Length: 343
Image (cartoon, rainbow, N blue to C red):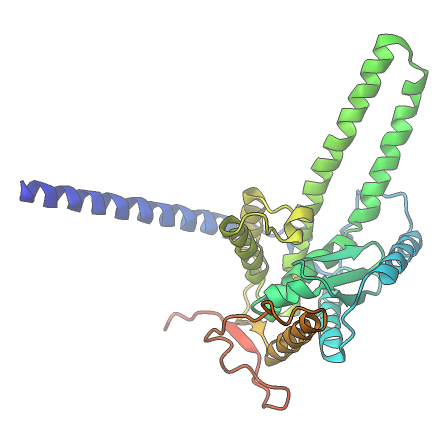
């Protein structure tokens, strides 16, 4: 009887090992298959700045008009939002974002500010106005993770998604004008149909825009020297956190829904990127900025009468034990090197 149980256990273990191995082989085969596909112009980071990514899109707004719209919207936000003006934090975030914008297809300047908000989010307005929440900086574990979210937002601006969606809305309004003159049951049915088609089309457009922002954002990270996988890893990490603590979903997911299909497409693109010997993951400056922001956040909690309650403090990890102080020596950037055959 014992021998039969031992044999059964062995069979189960072998079966599990076979399934895992088969899954790994399938994933490897898929990666190898994707690697063999040549990059299209819109997918190739080496073509950044040499292509027209807006070719063929519906857009009734000039670049100047778009910048004016963004300026008006930004003025409203500037009047209502509370900003982090500490030079160490503001200048650092601006420098990271400007580096990504410099390595993008953008044809306009960017204005980048840090909003004091616990929400893990960043958003961009038409015309190059980018806002990063302090909650995003605190939630990140590396500079590359922050750069990934900013690259995604810069991609939205570069692809002109805001005015494209507005243009599509105007087009549907024009197309629905003749229905005003159609009376009776037929007219009602047609108008109701238009009411259904408009939101569905916008939903589809929004998903397409998110996929394009993923595709471009990954390229902009690569061109800026960051590891592009950090963007996907950060989104997946936040998604996993939401499963552990439902109801705390970061705002970045309410406005940028991540789907399994989107992630698969992004990873399939990454394996086809030109090879690099190394990528930058983080810097000692990121550690100092995050420490400074934690200090300011804790100070605000105390000032608002929260001294008796918990303050924001992250659990130390091996990665952060040797975090530099403001006056301490600067460590070199943390790099991710390409594995060699000898390893």
